[in-house]
Amino acid sequence: MIGLRGLQRSFPAPNGGTLSVLRDISFTVQSGEFLTVFGPNGCGKSTLMSILAGLDFPSGGVLEGAAELKGQIGFVFQDYRRALLPWRSGAENVLLPLQIRGVKRAEQKERLAALVEKLRPQLDLRQPIYTLSGGQAQMIGLMRALIINPKLLILDEPFSALDYGRTLALRQTLMQVAKDFALTVLFISHDLEEALYLGDRVVFLSSKPTSVVEILRVPFPRPRTPDLPGDPAFGALKLRALRIFERCQLDCVR
Ligand SMILES: Nc1ncnc2c1ncn2[C@@H]1O[C@H](COP(=O)(O)OP(=O)(O)OP(=O)(O)O)[C@@H](O)[C@H]1O
Ligand SMILES: [Mg+2]
Image 1 (cartoon, rainbow, N blue to C red):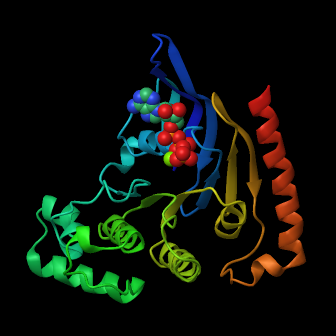
Image 2 (cartoon, rainbow, N blue to C red):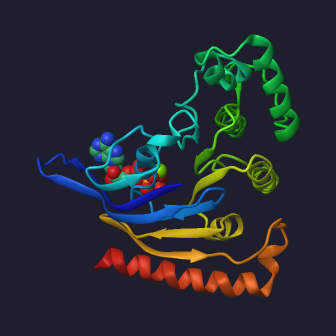
């Protein structure tokens, strides 16, 4: 679906030089795959997702397939509050992409009702954004990304403001939604266990200037259940992942 080869992104540095963030990023995203991306603060994960979504541009390298997905990418931004319109209600934020596309009011309502049924957001969608908690606002961001029935769903640490119970529940819902809608998912996580639990593969990134350290395949079948992390085979995979993580750290020191 998407292919990246030697992708680069640098920015002008405050001292007049160049800050190399993404140095050499190569991997593919298969259609229908759940790919998690794991890497340290500041390595360029959000930058990479912005490039894939067409919100930013690479400085070099090859990016294939992303342009063809224009209008079919749902994006849950890391900075979830700034990505919402605070004066609008939750529902009016969720519906914004449909309103921009001129979808009829009746269809907007239908699609919102179907999404509420699926996600069970447990919040009053009539409330304005500025009255919502962080977790509630994050839920609105997720709903807004899904309302367009995207082909590709990009989630940039989407559960960071949710409590443990909501996180566990939403992980399950997300996996179910991805399956039901045959979504391709790119999910950024800081949490190694979460990256392994959710992903078909995990892309490990070094710190900047960033390259792909390894791509780990996660062999567990779906549906995955919350007791999977207690499975010895999961423990063994986590140990392998920890070794890769250590290599990521070494890459950073070099
Ligand atoms: N527009 C920009 N201009 C200059 N530097 C930028 C710009 N956007 C990002 N950067 C720099 O690129 C680097 C990567 O930023 P990015 O937000 O992509 O990291 P990240 O991996 O998502 O970090 P985090 O885990 O903290 O979310 C940082 O050093 C950041 O300061
Ligand atoms: Mg980020």
